[in-house]
Length: 114
Image (tube, rainbow, N blue to C red; front, side):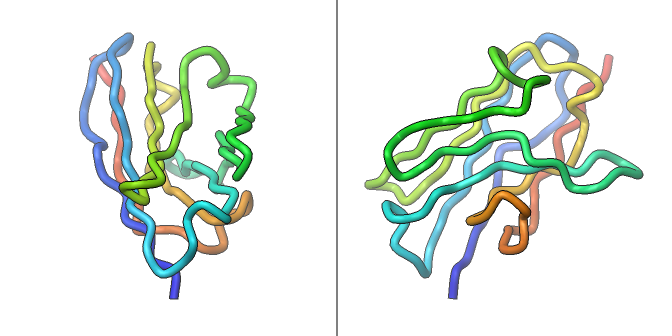
């Protein structure tokens, strides 16, 4: 059974940075495309970043140039480096084994506020 555990969220001011982590177990991490999604208050789940098994990445336009997704195969961990955070980035962030978020962790809260 796949288990995903996100961490690293918190309260930051606009313009600051955070790095989220997602520890993956119960699957062959190296063989999985992985995604980050988020859910803002009162809104639906939104895909924001993909890291594929070949090392390629893709991003939602609104986070391109600010967010970077990466993985450490030795630590079975997926990362999301978030820079220049904005209030509209406030959401619960999830990692997932699919772009729709059908299999995801419990999430980590990111709040961007002055």
